Every structure is written in C-alpha cells, then in structure tokens.
Image 1 (cartoon, rainbow, N blue to C red):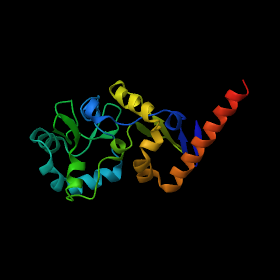
Image 2: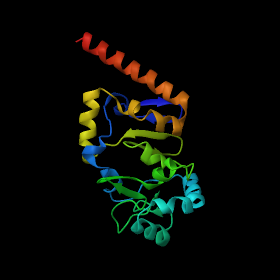
Image 3: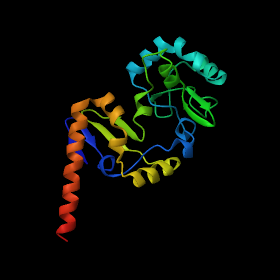
Length: 197
C-alpha cells in the first residue's frame, strides 16, 4: 500500500492492468451485482435536481423504479446507492446494440445535464471506502471483468492510467501526478529487487 495525504492506495491500482472491453463484457457491471452504484451525498442532491432531465433517456422499468424508490436507496450494508429494477440491474441502466451503459451519461452526452454519472461508476474498477481519517483506494477484482484484464495486459495499461479522467475528477490533478510518481518508484523498486536476486 502507498499513502498519499489521506488516501491509502492499494499497489494493484498502480501495477495491475485493465481496459474496459465493452464489446466483450457488454456492460455487465451495470446489470450484475447485489446492489446499485454507491452514491456520494452531493451526488444524490444533484440527481434529485436533475432527474427530470435524465428520465427521458431511461427505459420505462428504470423510470418506474426511480419513481417508486427515489434516486437513492440504502443497500444491505446501509450504504446509499442507485435503485435497482426488480433487484437486478441499475435503474439508470439503458441498452443499445446489446450493450448496457449509463442513461445519465447518455443525457450528459446529449447536453441535457452537467452531471456525467456516479463517480463510483466512472472510477470502476477502483472502489473507494471512507474511514475515520483515511480514504482507501483499491482495485476491485470482479470475474465479469476478465476480458478487461486481458485487454489491459495486452496493451500494458495499468488501472490508474486507464482511469486517469475519473481519478482527476474525484481527487484532482496533483493526486494523479503523485500516483504516477508512486507507480514509477514501484517499478524502480521491482527492477532493483530483480537485479539483486
């Protein structure tokens, strides 16, 4: 683990590879799982304000789930997340050409909202967990993302590089620069360890 200010980053974020391969996984992370996407409190406020602009981009079942449950629900751990459709896919999930993706992002791309999508989705496969005085930043391995690992390894793109935009969106440019420096130090360390064997 590497600590940067109040963030504790798992080294797998820096040295394991990942690139979403949508044509292979078909957006499975929007559909599978036992709860919706984790939401920050400020995101719930934004969703409540912007929901009327987003609803036209969603499918009828998603609209129904949001009207019945609201834009956020507490999951089995008490965390606030997006609601689900019949306990399955995210209520904000839409499909096109057999691929599932975020309806909020669809509204954003149509210039109907300034909110891109939940930061937890944008950051995936990084998951953030807040503790009393630290924020844990870890790579979440999920078997539905096997193809993303294969593609990431093929292209040699580590998790943090693939997620540059959402990392900067959540933590800022300076944190990302510090991540790059930490990754470089980690590589040098591994090289030295190999040389000294």
